Image (cartoon, rainbow, N blue to C red; front, side, top):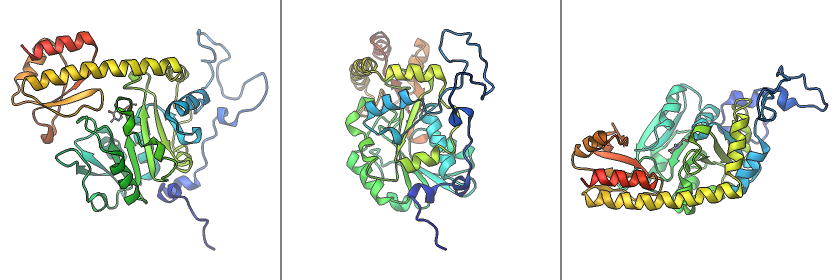
Length: 347
Ligand SMILES: *Cc1c(COP(=O)(O)O)cnc(C)c1O
């Protein structure tokens, strides 16, 4: 007897997930009535926060629909969890067999793709971006055998971007690979988002977060966006209650109309401060990458600058990666911090 035709997500997922009986939390089973004694919760609410004595929804509907409205992606294509970092880990756990499969990423880039994979005994093809920080033209042969390909856009820590058309080309060239586009900084260059392509390609996953432009790093809230078949597979692996109630309330408020306007104002003020910083860096002879996120990567001739920063109590990020020798990444900050930093740099 021939098997039912499978979706791409089903073909690529770890086989045991197809058979897995998904954990039925009391909350998922649900019910009707006035007396709720099905989840071993406390009946007492000792807090100001309504319902904090109850388990939260696995995927809080208000939060999902707020993100759908904001992103233009439909509700059945969005999963929320503890930051984009959790989404990276969920994707690896959903699609990669430990000791057998691999992921690919293009460095220098965000470190968690490789670390998450290694913690799960999944191999890492640590490939290189081109000298101009673009994707290599022979991406198909270089990523051969990888289950998941991670593309960070804008890229952390370089701040550089890859054209949408180039990313779409990769999605088309790798129809049997999950292509994950990490858009943690997309609010700083929204025109580069590939989120509208989710409906078109069954192998595309887009990651988002509220940690950067939305100023909620401490809340831990991020989003995975993909076609419903991929979402269905990831939902088999996710924890029963990945989003604490206070977090979903804060996140939903941040995604209200007012919250989004505030974010946009802050993004433009951060970009203005970033422009001032980039100019100052260039004036002291640094080689500066075009900054498409909320940070700029600067390359200096000497370690003098690091010393100056240290003395002034300014904590920026340096790297061990030999490709980033002499580089420092500066996050954009407010007017006062920017003034202070420029002062130190121009001394
Ligand atoms: C900061 C960052 C993340 C992590 O986001 P969280 O939502 O805070 O987990 C993911 N990807 C990139 C590229 C980042 O810079």
